[in-house]
Length: 493
RNA sequence: GCCAAGGUGGCAGAGUCUGGCCGAACGCGUCCGCCUGCAGAGCGGAUCAUCCCCGGUUCAAAUCCGGGCCUUGGCUCCA
Picture 1: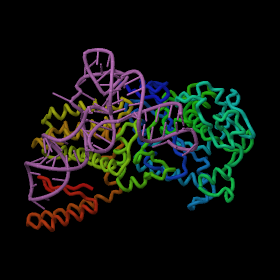
Picture 2: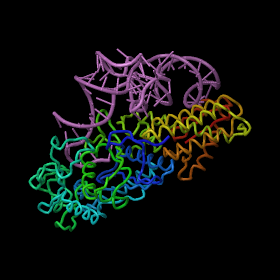
Picture 3: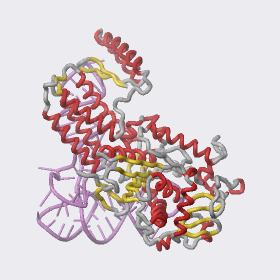
Picture 4: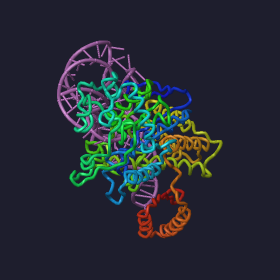
């Protein structure tokens, strides 16, 4: 079964056919680095990450570019606050490293390139000139605006009609524009006081214009918001790419404008497939920086760990909106625990002397085969991660049943199950089953816990359950879960 | 106002493109049982859905068509 996905451009499910049958050019609209990332951003990252992993799994080589917008008035507005320094670039750098740290902790595969706007101003200027040459843009007072009337397809991505649209950009631009819907490719001068004051919630009287400016054929100025992604996508991938992914809140105007300016400049289709990751909602509203209802990635990782966070985010298909609440996070923790325990049990059982190479459990083998197919079908069906995860859970059930139901285990069957967990769980979903001892100090900790549990066993044998339970409770507080089994106590961190 | 995406059990969330296997998945929760000194995990079972409403098409509709109601998002910065 081949991969098919829902293309925002057409609104339909389409078979995925990249221009080159062996490789995929993927661009993801990254962050404007003016704050720490929150779970809503992580949702998009994790889904793009899994898309990347799946594309590679089915045999494509993937070239993945993910930008950082480090030139933006909101970044300028942050300058001089919270010890971040006065320079736009210093503020941006601070948040870039914060975001990179978050991405690493979420176990995201690296993109091939993380281009920044500040390093691509020459490419941006070249692209604007190409748009001007095609007479799809005009200069006005040192700024350059895209002429939406010159591009008949304008609005087709978001399904909007030009006549129905309200104006784009701030009020003071209007006088310079032919059409209120025209948008800036290049803006003259530094960021103005009003814009900074607005994002900083300050009085414009006390704010200086700021932000870096660059020389251009139209004078000193700054690139517009939308042109950067077009320029960087072309610079690091191609004029025409396969997959352009971003948050659903970028459909209009950002992606609409990208298409217009790119295709006006090159005459080529900018991206064949547009995928949009839907929003994360909290209590009926979108999670966003401006609404102050967000949960940062760092908080989430600290509180529940990377695997449950991934489990949470992958438990809804990317195209649907998803609800965040304490309850849904708790559910994800439980889901992850069940999955990991299933994996652990399979590993332990396969390593035990009760695992026989001559034993064959048909039910287990059959379930594995079926669930591998189910997982593949789900992923090929527009990256249905929720459905794919259910295949993994079916496998957990089969493993548990197999181990509980007999004295001798099917060694080969268990190995197949483990391999399936690793291939799909680790490899595709990006979980880290085996990675519970990242700092290497667990070796000693394990010995100490084992020692403690031996003491506890002696207490239990002597009937001193209070002491025994006390030990169990105490080490549980330290993060070690003890389970008494027929084969003696077992523990996990 | 315009545009888009949705409305499925206590919760969350698949299934809707490609109508029948959906008497509705996976999971969380709750209850009971097995196991256990207890707890947990696991297993077994139970609980739990007129698939937003009305009408239509069809032998057959959660799925298709028409109308309505509601929610969220975009139209200003946003993954």
